[in-house]
Amino acid sequence: MPAFKAKVDSLPKGQISEPFKTVHGWHVVEVTDRRDVDKTDAAVKNRAYRMLFNRKFNEEAQAWLQELRAGAYVEVINDDS
Image 1 (spheres, rainbow, N blue to C red):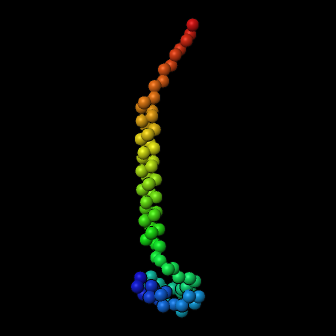
Image 2: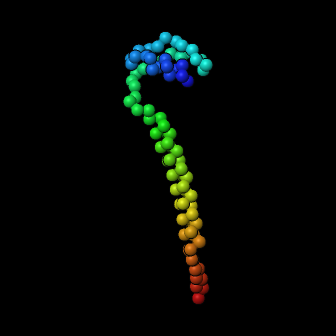
Image 3: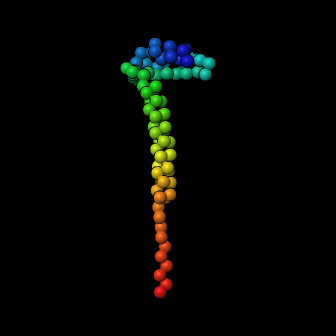
């Protein structure tokens, strides 16, 4: 929201804003600190990478287990003598 971002950007660090309204409702903002770099994109990319990695890992683990089971040979010897 440009109106929200503009209000937050103009507010000095450590100060609480007056109530202001956007299309999402009323807001009161306190700026406690500022980031030097916007890390939200990096966090989203990292989370997506982990989700894809975990999915692929699980698929490969299941394929490996299936391969092991397919290659297993069990001989049952019934010695009733």
